[in-house]
Amino acid sequence: MRHLLQFLSKKTAAAASTTSTSYSPRLCRRPLHSLPQPPSFGIAFDIDGVILLGHSPIGGSPQALKRLYHDSGSLKIPYVFLTNGGGVPESKRALELTKQLGVNISPLQVIQGHTPFKELVKRFENELVVAVGKGEPAEVISEYGFKNVISIDDYASCFENIDPLAQYKNWRKVQATNCDMSLRSDPVSQRVQAVFIVSDPIDWSRDIQVLCDILRTGGLPGRAISYQPPIFFANDDLAYQALFPAERLGMGAFRIALESIFNSIHPNAMEYTSYGKPNPVVFKNAESVLMQILSSSYHNHLMNGGLKKPFKMLYMVGDNPAVDIKGAQQAGHPWYSILTRTGVFKEKGNHADYPADLVVDTVEEAIDYILMKEQSS
Image (cartoon, rainbow, N blue to C red; front, side, top):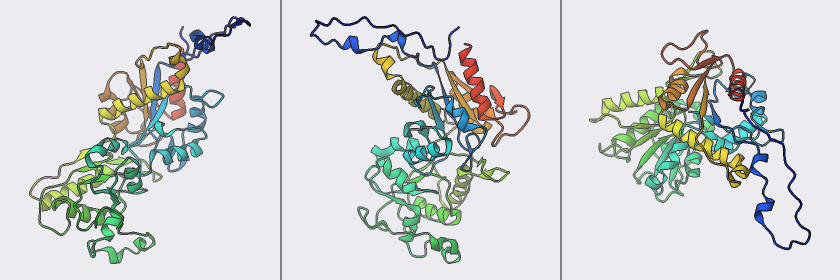
C-alpha cells in the first residue's frame, strides 16, 4: 500500500573523516529515500460557493485546507484556487485569502478569470486599452505589464455627456473619477485598441453605452462607424452564487446584453473572446501551475534526482455544474470532478446534464474523500 506521503526512516550519514580537507556537495545532500515523496495528485478549488460565501468561509474550509500543509506551515499537497472571479491582482487576492482562511497562500496559487490576459501583453503592451469591472480593473491589467491602461470610469469621464443618465446617478458622485492625462496622449483623441472585461461591470447602462461607442467606431467614440476593436471577457458565467439565496447574474449575462445591443446598431455581429472555466485551456494551465507548485514545495527531492512525473489525478472541487464540472469533464484525464452543495448546486442527487464523479455536501467532505482515496491507493 502506497501512502499519500511516505516518510521513510532517516539513516545516519557516515561521519566524514576528520582529516579530509576536500568539500563534496554530495555529502551535504539528504539521501533521496529520507525525503518525503511528492504527492502524485493536485487539487483545484473554486472559491465562491465552495470556499467562501461573500467574505465568510463556508463548508469547514479553513480547517480542511490546513490538512494540506505540514505542521511547519509549508505546503504538503499542491493546490490552486481556480476561479472565474477577480477584479484585484492575484497578489492582493492571495493576501485576502490568507487572512480569511488562516493558511499561507501565494499569488501563484490564485488563478482568476482574467489571469490569462497576461498572455496578451506583447500584443497590446503599448496600446491604449480600456479595463472594465468592479474592484481594480486598471491595476490588474497594469500589473500584467500593459503600459497604457485606463479604467472605463476614468475613460467615460473624459467625454462630456457620453452617459446621458449620469445626472440621475447620485450614487456615482461619491466615486472619484479622473481623466488620466498621464497616458501617452489624450484618451479622447487616442484610438482604443482593445477592451478587457476584468470583472462584473457595475454600471451596466453606462458601460454598455460607452463600449458600444468604442466597439462600433474603431475605438474613437463619437466618430463614424468603423471596424470593431477586440474585446476580451474574463469569463462567461451566466450566474453565480453570492450572499442572496438565489443566483445572481454574472459576466456572461452582461456579455449577452452588450452583444444583443451592439448587433442591433452595427452592421457586423460582435466578435469577442471569453476565458475562464469551463474552457479546457484553463484546466491545462491549472495543471501547469500545480506542477510549478509541486516543484517548489519539493525542490529538495527534485534536486536529489527525483523525477518530475505527470499527476496521476487532479481534483476539481466546485459548486457550479455547468462551469466547474463541465470544465473538468471536457479537460479529461487526469481530472476528477467533485461537486459541493454549498453554492449554485443544492440538489440531493447529482446534476442531470453535467453529473460529477462525486457529490458531497461541503469542501471539508471533499478533502476528506481525496486524502482517504489517495492514502489507500
